[in-house]
Image 1 (cartoon, rainbow, N blue to C red):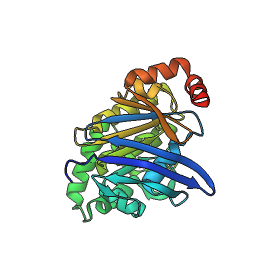
Image 2: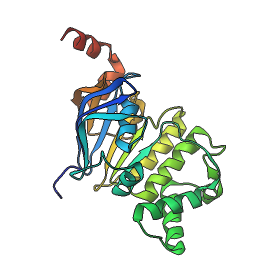
Image 3: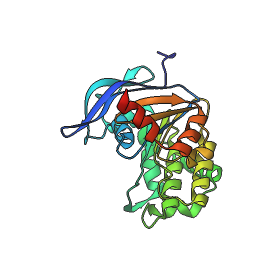
Length: 252
């Protein structure tokens, strides 16, 4: 199914416990497209990211998720990753005792399904670190251990560059970053993005979209996408907030 979208979410419904969070969400992302999902707190943004990646904390009760036309709902998270899905977490966890270089080598080998020779891996790693302007000393540090907020997000950008996913989902990757760190992370994302890849930015604020320019912006409220548009929609939301849209939904 070569003409299928990279990612297609069809009327997705999902619960955490007995509480329904996603209530029929649909979305299509094609190669080369950058989509942004914006919404108030509690609207289901991070739930969507976690459901796409197969978090066991959530139960899918309806709909489907397809990558290149293939349903992934029955797949474990590692299978989804090998298929080309990547999730950058809002709050990356530390892994003391595991160096970035060892972590990345294991991840790359798992993604490829075969061991990449050490020389080739090192060449790839140094090339990607150069692309992202990351000091080589970074690779010797333990994963996220003692990292600043900006360093954690740069580590995830390095993971994304090394894994070369088909679909990357960035869950509020601007969370907790000052303006300089935000700019650095955004430059990294822009350097990695390519015409064969799709990108989904999940964010609460418009400021990230000043640096990573989406072609499509969607508003997620109460588990559904209720409005879609171009980059101008993000600017409108920054100026007016979500109150007008929520009020219109309440009276509809």
